[in-house]
Image (cartoon, rainbow, N blue to C red; front, side, top):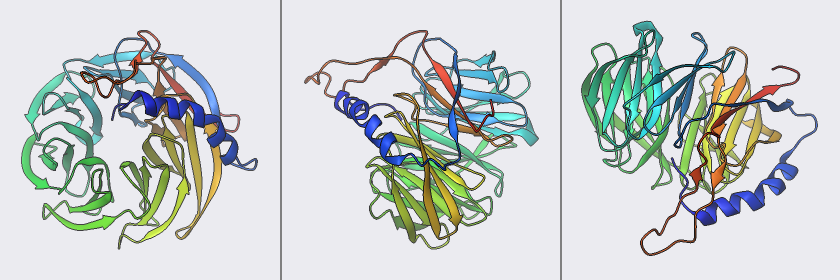
Amino acid sequence: MKYHSFLLLVFCVVTVSAVAAAGFVSSGPGYHIAKKTVLGGEGGWDYLYCDSAARRIYLSRSTHVMVVDADSYAIVGDIPNTPGVHGIAIVSDLNKGFISNGRDNSVTIFDLKTLKETGRVAVGKNPDAIMYDPASKRIFTFNGGSQDTTAIDASMGKVVGTVALGGKPEFAVSDEKGHVYVNIEDKDEVAVVDTHAMKVIAHWPLGAGKHPTGMSMDPESRRLFIGCRNGKLIIMNADDGKIVTDFPIGAYVDATVFEKGLVLASCGDGTLTIVREVSPDKFELAQTVKTEIGARTMAVDHSNGTIYLPTSDLILPGAPTAENPRPRPQPVPGTFRILVVTRGGAS
């Protein structure tokens, strides 16, 4: 996802301090920004992915994917020719990576060792989020333009089916048992896809949540964590769609992750809200970390709990006009960076 308007960004700026002050809990898990690493380059960004085992971070950069060492934060490679890239999925057992190219309506397949492209597959219109479902051994793209999901056999690299979703999809998550849950942004609901039968088996409304974007899951408690653009984190039962509870979060959320009993929601207003899972039906606000404006997407290194948030300096656009009704802030060339967020004294 990209920023939609000047007014939204201004709202983010003026609300960040209030949100952070209201949400901080002194006995929280102690997350803080431990390091800021400037990677530079031009263009925007969207999703990122941390391959904990291979010690690599993959960052989408508008037309290419930047590959960074997860320990030294040095740039170790680049995957070009990915127009309108949104996301990256990794299948380590097959030594393959997959990239969704939003402007090309395609998926790039690349070799994890060499980072060289080995194939390209046509999918639906404007593929956004992309993920691997271990149960079906398929890659799924979630196509905002055609409002469907395309399934690719990860081993063969060929499309094996398409499922209409009934609305515009955003992020999705697999329970690794044959179900994929996907946010339907324009319907304020979650669609449940049976990845073997290749059909939608349920549509669950989000209640107080509007315009869902980020999603993650605790596979043990069977809880979904859904970040919504109206400042809500919705917690949902993945078995029946019932809403367990909700929490206030910052503006312009674009990602949630689940890490060792904690739910994290990253927001473009410069806040990272952290909620503790006490039990499957009890959650409590743990901490709100002040990050930076624009740090709306996120990845976690599950080997050590480190959180990575990309952002850059931004040039504010002018007022909306008839020719450009939704002006967007532009990244300042050379200022792209990742914020490294850790717990306690870790670095």
